[in-house]
Length: 166
Length: 339
Image (cartoon, rainbow over all chains, first blue to last red; front, side, top):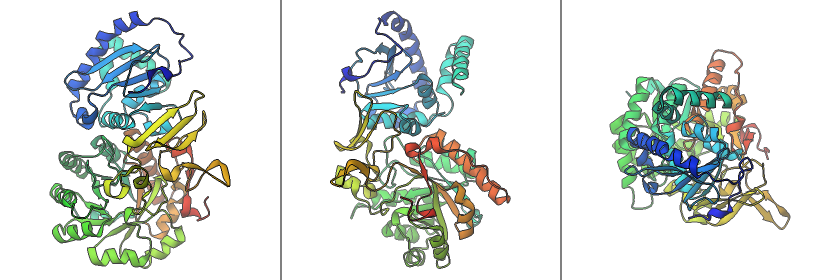
């Protein structure tokens, strides 16, 4: 586990309680990850040694982080506080749309690392495994997630993509 | 589905795939052939979560063949003495599922395939480091090698001269990693981590790599607990490989790139010269890269090769954002004084 207290705070978000927001999000995130696990079982074979690993995904624009444990039986995807971050095996940090595009295979993780837009720490092998597992998924996980919420979900994704130019 | 004629057109675009999805992406983007490897030590990109199971390879071969593309299997590591079963099994699977060629480096692997799977075409991997006509002819005459992937240490005039003296096709890298150690002989990773690039297929194994960001935003990349580079805030970064590390020395206390700096090969402007010199196939490096990289790079070079074949000047896409350190070089292909 890495020391969770050393991560720099995001400049855009002062430290404030995010518990109510996170509480609202938890059932949504749980539904999303269960659906992805059901639709893409092949993804978990690529990440087999790290199915119990705890990944923290830190989108710089969000006031909270996301915790992912890619256990095919009991997948975990939940919002967690940013300050301090909970214990974890690996941390992946970058702009929200970059992270979304990486999940969807629309951006290249190595290039984002070279440009310093993407920061990783902790267990590098776990991060590489997750990256490769996600990259083998055909189609768009973001679109699938948006579809889960019908027209409002698709509208939100459309706005995000238009704003990022993707 | 295998046929010698399918390798006949000069300017063949040989593209990387680390996953079945990347293979389909490469084929759809215009690859003439796609190279890939099994999920084990038989290939030199044995990275976690990467590569193909036998079932995935079989389905991928079918996908490629249905669209007129070939699949080349990298079996380009060196089996440790007495532990050859993995390579034998891989060759048998390759023959069974209809792979179009195997890319080999080890003479034992080449001999095994030539003897037991004579229908399998053999390409000599860059990992064999064959850079002289004598060495290349040896592999052609003894194992029936049909193509050599040349090390990235030769100028175009040297490649042209070699072509005159060998009985096989030439393949050269045109884009991607610019690793200049004597390929197939590099032991730097082994020295630092105990794991071998050449026998385990891992250059800088991810399990031994850590990144640490200092409070001021500087990024340190470490391999086996040893810092091999430190990037200032905002400075572009490179892979955590020892040959791209930055080191201090008594005469360079500020630190310098002793072997090679983080930079990628890009020969897009030399494609016509390479074709004129007799290069048959162009290889894009990057089995460890994403579908996004494959789509952009393969698509760009597809357009460039097609334009050259049509007698037009290629419209070369800007690929620098995808390069290591966001820097490009033409390396030794242009001049041996590139550094």
